Length: 301
Image (cartoon, rainbow, N blue to C red):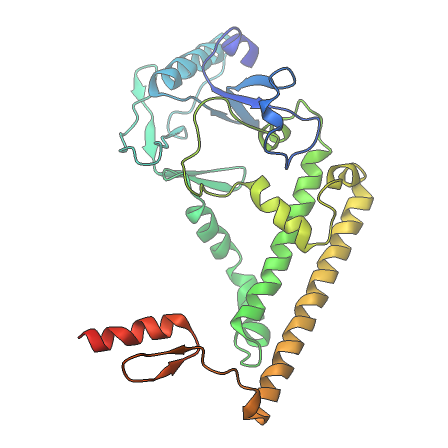
């Protein structure tokens, strides 16, 4: 049916990709002879289908083609369950989309769930994070007495434990995508980028592959040949598991050394670091420059 609907069409999201490795090499997509192009027109999962387009006009064309193919195969689109989500470019005003099926306007929404993930109009993951927190509330509740309400465990320590779990999940997913066939859409998206447009100047928002390098270093996995190791599923899971254990041991060791140093300073005041910043007006000393800057404002008043 999809072949009948989208054969010979150009509506969709144009991406360029290169799946021969070296994901962390930012210049690999500049080799024009080795880069492939494809147009992502739809995402399928079970009996759901998500159409993609870069403009409202293209979305209407894709919807009409999809609706016509459904009619040819005797299928009916449930307009009550079909929703439209428009994500404007950063800094651009939002304009409510108008997409119709047989003259009936589809319901525009600010967010909807696809494959268990929440996609929002703002094109960020705030709604996704809030949704996952609410789903995990029961687990957090069971840990409340033993972990979250324990005064002996600092909040920073609790967050570091969660951070290690997130890094472990990220590394395992990267290995899973690496082992996929080159024709799979998740691998194209991970190893590619949009064919048109540029990222904002300054420091753009981090992508999955941007944070993956820091995750590999944290798990003590060689950055240069991680893709070769990921081709073996059992070896990759072992590396990730061992790296997570090593990262946890480093965290505990660092916490113990900091605690011992703090106790030593409390017992011996002479070990306290001397103030480095002194006020030229009143002679008061500060350990941090920000303290001196804030203090000088009182003299100006």
